Amino acid sequence: MKCKSVIPGVVALVAAVGLSGCEKKSEPAAKPAAADNQTTAAADWCAEHGVPESICTRCNPKLIAEFKQKGDWCKEHSLPESQCLECNPDLKEKFEAMKPKGK
Image (cartoon, rainbow, N blue to C red; front, side, top):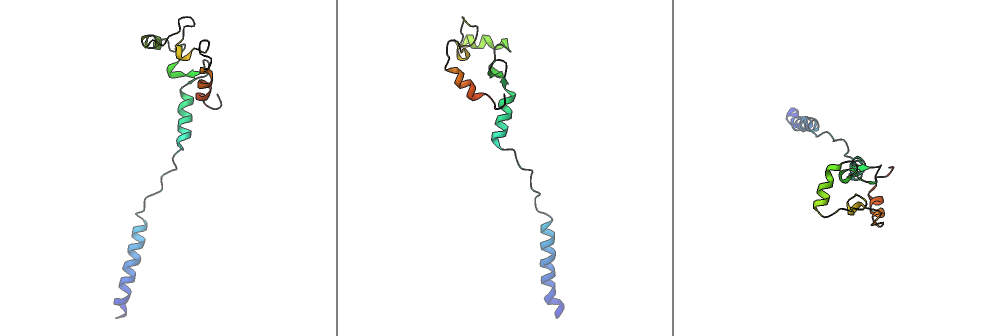
């Protein structure tokens, strides 16, 4: 009779040990979103001209036609009006705020 009372305990122990091996392994901690954004911003920053690389017409002249088509062009300074600090000095703060830290 003693054997019958031990069986449920053994079954429970075996089940517990077996299930513990099926636990999901913890995933490596994800990078904080801010770090990803900073990396992305740094990759899309033209340090030479102080604007995002993706809109820098001095580095990528192919973008000029698109800005001209939108009516966003400063003929006097050969830049998009939306980037012309000579005509719009208040833009300097905007681009400084966009600038990645350490650039």
